[in-house]
Image (cartoon, rainbow, N blue to C red; front, side, top):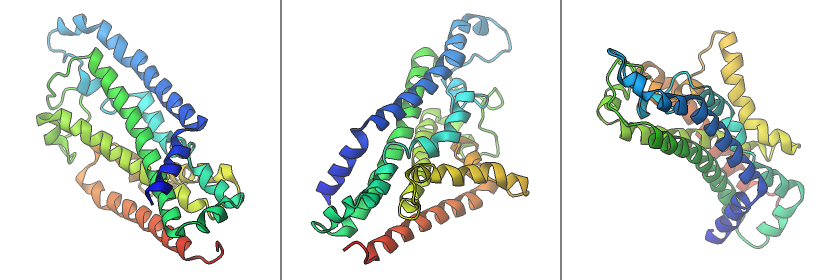
Length: 271
């Protein structure tokens, strides 16, 4: 299992598409830094000398806590797509090229399919965590940490489940945001694992997770249904009344992915 996982991780992280993905994420982060954070830093003296105006800081200018950040909204929209680019094609190509036969005659195919699933999760987690972490660190080097005060340009409202904790331990909540969003988008990205064995086109495999994500974001509101997945991917804005539906969606995703794994490993056509 360790050997298989090492091989798949090398395939995932040592290819041009991973570098391209990280480059795209870095460009979006830098856009946010130069569009919002740098001008804020330049004008810090003005803010500090303006009576009654809260001084901007890390916890209201970091793109995950800045409710008006275009870069953050863009990343949250495309994460399900870009996290699938580095690796999900390999899942499809292994089946399409019959490479899978060379593997499963040498090892337990249960381990092979599991290593593919774990690798896809790790890839998704790494891409999202890398993006959020470098954004946070760069913002922290340019702006003071400050101390959040309720009602002063912070996205954490009184009805948010992390609202009170954010104002007491903002750094802890920021770390929780990075971890939770990385896990959430990694789970969504694992849908490409499921579709890799169902679709007959590699491009469709890559965009499969994004397609479902986009469907919920755009189509469901048109029919009057709520779409908590995108809204609640911002953990800081997750409210108590959204939690049940949010957890149900996560459970549905996990069940779909896990069932796909067990169905695939029991199939007898790869022998």
